[in-house]
Image (cartoon, rainbow, N blue to C red; front, side, top):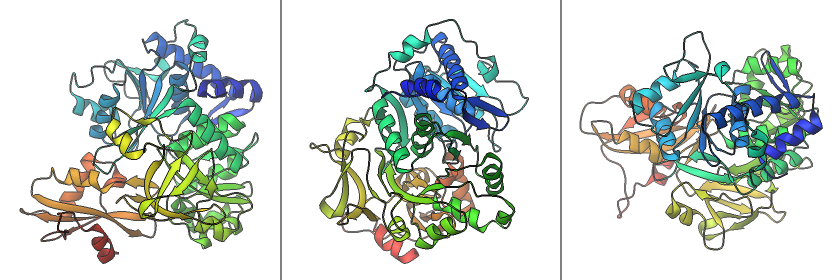
Length: 506
């Protein structure tokens, strides 16, 4: 059982009528989910999708996403999740580079019509491979020409089970894009066996099982929501309760009404929950297991999550798109260990501290490589199979990982990785900008936010700089602060001294 379609078939067989997904008024059993996935896979096959083709999903957390993703897998295709915060420019780049043949996209959502943005960027023939577009309706407006509404999909009578069973453990299951220090996103290739293996390890550490009800706040386009969320639930029989966008009071209502037991999220998610003025009005007694990380976790937060939110288990973890889940704490770890460390190795990973105290990883679940980029792959994974993470850390005598810094300039805002080079590349296209440097600075709510230091040769103000970025970048990448400077400090080789800037502006 080392492919995602095999995991789904087993879930339908073993968990049958138990609830697989609760999404508003939609409630699907595991058997019902398999039926829906088969229908979507038949639809894709009928539209000409072949084994190994790339199928993209650009939508928030709903049952549609789960069906679309699993349907792509069962059709033998490779899934390409797209960040819902991406602009049309960013989505176009991903669809073009993956040569995606099909796209499932949400209708107008949170004030943005994503497909309209994409169409404006792509023009009439900018995506020649994209033969099928399916819209998840969010209003009563008609679909654009050539776009199929979700409820209008037609599934021909084809042998979807034969296609599904032909999927092999080493087939590429998905391509998740992560921004790079060069300023261009990189597509991380994972195999089915790797997705299943890391999800199984995650579920075992959290002791997730049938009867658990999992609040899926982490976005499905991210490995935390997709692999440590959807796939974990399929493996364990836990019920998925997706949230399209995080709202604290909505989360409180869902926890009480759906008796949520499992609730992973970034530290800011739990801080907002603890600080909400109506928290005491809701029954949160069902909560038992939380995983947090992606930012500094104060010991006090872990203690409050246990004492005030009632979690029996609070764990921290370390992961990255190139390896998904590398380390996790365990149930028996005390709060100071949970807050101070990222836990011990899991899912077959080996840890080693290399030159400059960089964390190196090796194991069967290190990515297959970067899409169409052998040079970047060779730079990331050395000849002995060690993945160079770019994170500075240590491993203590008991095998617990402690991350102390980053070799790269990446910072984490609200749980999302931000690579300054990508923002700087965007700023370089703004008329009047001569030079720029972007750094992360502390923020009480989001952990870190971006500060752009900009040198100009024409009149510009901070609002104009942010507006330019907002049109081209996901909102978490847009600098929250903009400072204008005469020049940036550089070393003799011309490299911006970002360590100096971080020290000055922190």
